[in-house]
Image 1: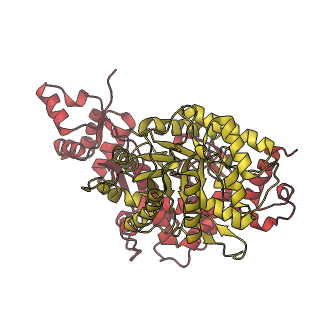
Image 2: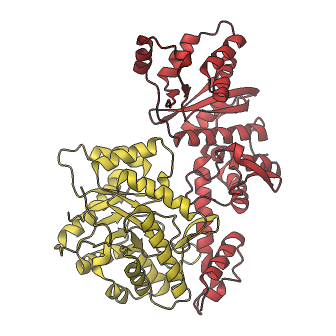
Image 3: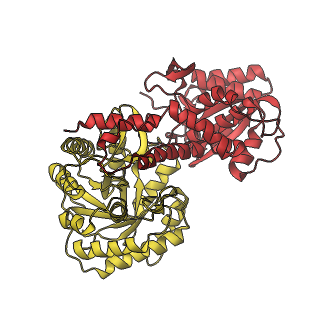
Length: 288
Length: 294
């Protein structure tokens, strides 16, 4: 009698290693094991397609062949740990990382790492000579981070947003806005870049054009958020970054406004608040 | 309500055009859409918003590809939790999955992998179906796989599937493209297969295009969903509809996606096949939940 788990283990071993020796006993007597590779190819093809879709600009910049070389290594070491490929390659909760796998931080629960982190470690082993000289490992990582932020933002929940009408209501009731439980919208995320590569990435992402690599080593912070079901992104000034970072970390708008004002005395609080409202960047946390 | 229109599996690039169909003066009430359930395992954003708009306008079906019914794994419970949430939110008129496996322990192999047709595999499949049905509170349809080669077997595929359906109270999603490819790839006898099916258990039919394998062009046809439906598959669809009566027919296209208009043209051909078949009141009867459209 065939043991089902023996079959599953033999098939899993084949998919991961390519070794079909344990699987042949489960084939009908006249079958050739050579057809089995259809399934292994299907597994890799699906994973590669998902990574290419999730890191579309990076794929375009590197070229499909080089991207696939790196991505194939990633699939081997970190196959999907969720039964969907929608977010394959993304590790959302960086704080969950706590173990080392092959020198790379791994998520404690599912023993995986994000593709960007793997890419950072792995790309030193791959030839990048065919690329523009300005494009180096750090700027490639910046591109990967921007791709990841775009997809993550796209699929985020974005409830309880604050409207202008609500704020007008609060003001009419004489409420102190700084004391209300405003938070940044759930879709908000930040990407800290080593290169001023944001415009270059936009051209890759939305126009599919590599163009001239006219960026330089200059730190830039990009704010990503969702607005009416589409992803928005903008480069933040130093003052804005002080505001957003403090707001994000402390959850206090008052602290954030103080931090921004201390950084830049001419900081226009009311203009920023209007921007936050108009762009649907604020939510109101339910009061208990 | 008896429903047996032709539908399309909906891709994001066609959301707007699909929604516009409902604005037409003479809206075709037989049109419906199917989506891959796992593509909506997201917290929010435009995918879910569009799906809501589609659901408000058309019958919607969920077709799962990642539940690994033939080998429940560590990924099963979180998977089923997400499916249940989506089913509750969107109340699709059909929910289906595959008689395959795709996960082992905590690894998802992202493909529809074959089951040997043995008693132990059958028991594992039934366990997976029951777990799934329990999680979403209604019976599901199980799709016959594409076979590329033969594994050890205690029984024929049709008997294997019918036994699983009987034990679990589920229905059959008969993919006639898969059936055609299995007959070509492994010599499966189509007439014997169809003879063994219980027509009243068929709740949905799939059609799709296939490709010829580059490495084994004389031997293997691949279930690619990347081309129009082949003439042989149209003929098999006609044969199946004549034998079992009208059922919801779904045109699948997952690769080389053409324009929405081209897909609708092909879908309309399926609809014309359905309209040529006299109704036999053959609506699938499911154990816990009738297939009812609002």
